[in-house]
Length: 133
Image 1 (tube, one colour):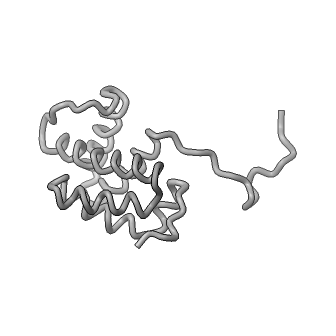
Image 2 (image 1 turned 90 degrees about the vertical axis):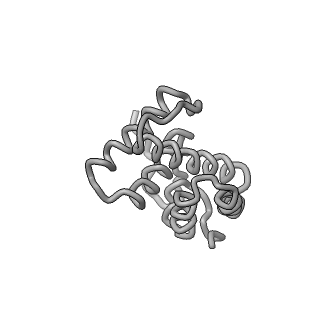
């Protein structure tokens, strides 16, 4: 049945994204920032999805360089998704900074810190990015 309420009004609340959707959104934005070859980018996104869906994000050894990049991107995305859900934007940014100093995929973490300083990323995830710096 059709609801008479206009769901496209600014006051309508966006449905919450699933954890998997948040992970792949963060991951795809990171992948786009590190990979310019369209074919490799498509392969990278496919591998990230396969890791999320088949492995339940369990640690599985990487098969090659592209798979390792998918693992590194998902590690950062998982950290961001978990910490931002619990502590917000500032906490997620701080967690990535700390992790990068501890050797946690530093190049990917640096890319995320650049992306995370924009409001677009947080708005798409449904988080208040007003405090992102």
